[in-house]
Image (cartoon, rainbow, N blue to C red):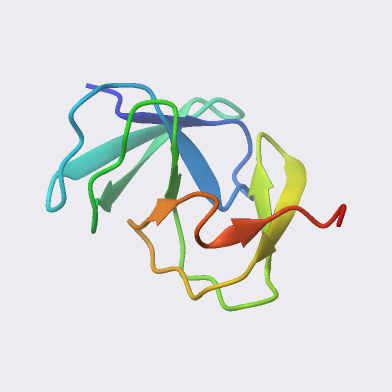
Amino acid sequence: MIHAVLHEHEDTVGVAVVEGIKAGVALNAWIMDGDTLVEIVARQDIPIGHKVALKDMAVGDTVYKYGVDIGKVIAPIKAGDHAHVHNIKTKRW
């Protein structure tokens, strides 16, 4: 089963594509570019449509989703964490 999707190997977050992802679940994330899978364990519940971190990120790091810079980290993120507005902010303002 595919739990999350990302476009590029360099993406730092993937998007949850199934409901009910709970902390502790081993997730399969499909990397479209190259048609490969990576596995990551969810550290927190991840709502469908929300982002899951694929690597540890420090404050100030750039977040990449679908090969695009979507913002910067404002609170430390660990691989498997729920990545959303509480720990990522746009660079636009």
